[in-house]
Image (cartoon, rainbow, N blue to C red; front, side, top):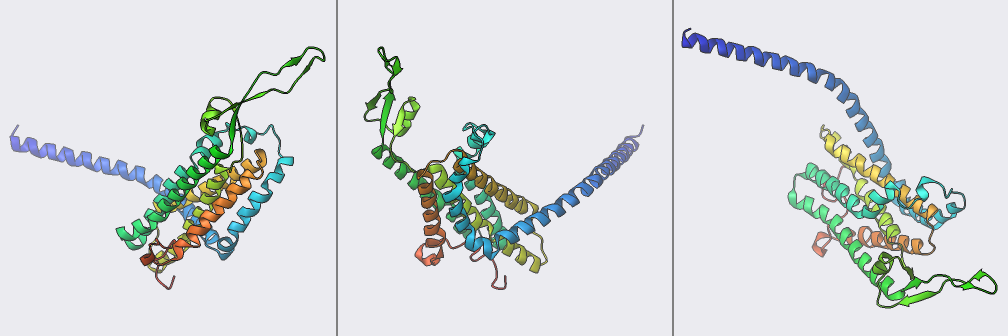
Length: 312
């Protein structure tokens, strides 16, 4: 066979195979479009409703009051909850996977949302980093509070080793177990050695849960303004941004459920109330204090500042 004829037949075969692949790809893409369209429509509807709720003045002005009421009166639910419930188990999946890494989940999801929202609104790296610094400052505040509370707990408490109860041979009654004091022990090392720690403490779990809930509401409240700006410019927010917003709302719901479960199933008065008060003060000092200053005063600004036009 002539080499030119052989090359022509090979190219013709390649074109046929390419056309077949294109037809197969079109047949596969067509059903996926029918599946993705309703999912995308549902995503837009749900995120728009949630953005309107979180951006409303009712939530903005009264969410911290609702959270304070939950922390104050949540322990009352302990009289009605069942001790055999799955949430009464301290080793429940939610406690192990979420409660012990509350700030990690909050930082990752909220930070990703702030980065994507800020960059999609203004395409400015410096402005995006300035808004992201709010999450970093909140994390620094949590780290300082945790260190200070740990030092205070170690200074105000003591470690005891319970001894075996002594039997009274005459009355055949068991006497209360003796406690042997162990000095120079921190709370962490005491509990790790399966000994008993007694002292004043502040619930760090309640503190970080309250701070994370208030932070999430503040950061998510500007998404409605972003939707309004994109609609005015005849643009639609990207699906990843909507998915991140939805994940942050789900995370907010999880934190509220965990806080309610802790207050109802593991009440610790006034440790939890002190932790909630410190979380509230932390949010107040940042979002109601420092972040309201001007950038020249070292403030990163409030959520949404510099991202939207005045008409929004």
